Length: 419
Image (cartoon, rainbow, N blue to C red):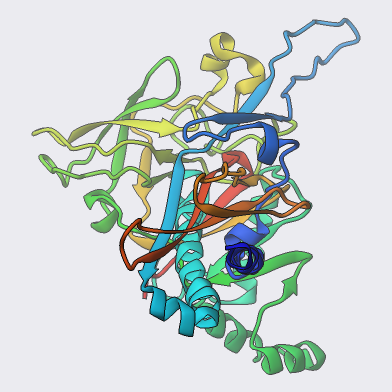
């Protein structure tokens, strides 16, 4: 059995490399948690926290007005577990050991890695509230459109370093094809030969066939206008009317993006805009929120929407804190908004704000167990081998325990046509 364990360990190390390197979202994520693999979150449901930059306001005087400090924390919960298990007879194992431990193991690991990658990619929907792209044909299909999306991402005040863009693989040929029409011979030669985007504007680009499709609610699918009625005292609950959907089940879906229009007649003459996340200055970005729970309209077309982030204008800032103000004027009745249609969701992420944790699993005694942990990233996986007593059956299990999250203010969804 010692040889069996050695073989299991050898292939387990190889499989760990496949898990890390074959999937662009997982491989590009921040997995470096101090002591996470050894000391923290070894059980399903355990949580690890990390600090976010604190926020402040500036006094327009030399007279100091002290403000309370507020520690902002993001948490990552290890709430997912997956495994691939397969069995064989003693005869199969004896005569085909290399195939079972190598070929079978690598293919099993590829399947497992794909499931993990698919899960982690859902941050494109669940951890974003700003978007670029319309979800319609031709959206974000050129270098110019990508440059505009990156500029919008930076304009809000998100981290300007270590920016990564994740695109559906089906859109990459169109982007490159459009770019080849530009008179830039050296760059065109390189891209035509590789058919890859590579780096552009100091940003790293990745393509994936596992980015999530998103199905909008009926309001998004039908391009229905949404009229704002009111906002609650927390800035997180909007009451709206959709006159074209008087009694509609599924009018809004969890994950829908609501984009406010440029209604200059409500709440003053300035257009409704986000404030920069750092500095609290009006930027060029329209106000957008993610709807966090599905909602129907009643017989009068009215729906109650829970949204993220909280929309805090000057009035709400007096009670919720000036440091938390994020829009330049108050949300008011008769403002209008639109809902993003169904789309394939890519995303932009900056500042290592996408986190994936895969802690070390314990030895699966009494079975022969191999546990591999990457010393640089802390990413771990386990493989164990055993036989059913008195039966001609051998089995191998590959499994992982993991959690993931992303900081919403450092993210932006990219809405592509779902071809």
